[in-house]
Length: 50
Image 1 (spheres, one colour):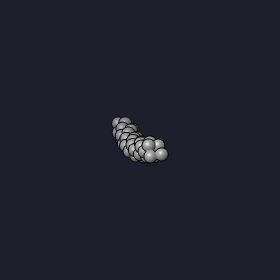
Image 2 (image 1 turned 60 degrees about the vertical axis):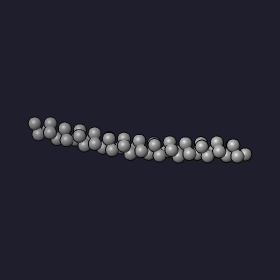
Image 3 (image 1 turned 180 degrees about the vertical axis):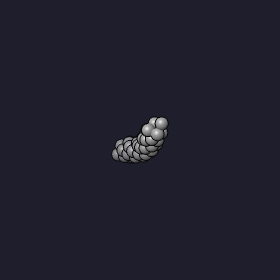
Image 4 (image 1 turned 120 degrees about the vertical axis):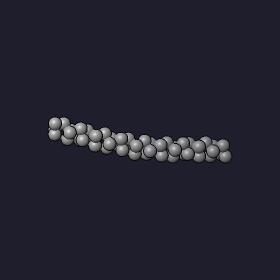
């Protein structure tokens, strides 16, 4: 039973790590998407001005 408990604990910590990585990854992706959208908007405005 002891081995099972330690396995479950490792499994939970792995899931916790994965979810943290997923949260960080999604926030980074959101930031990159926002920057990309801003760049596209800026380049479109430049075309209109030119």
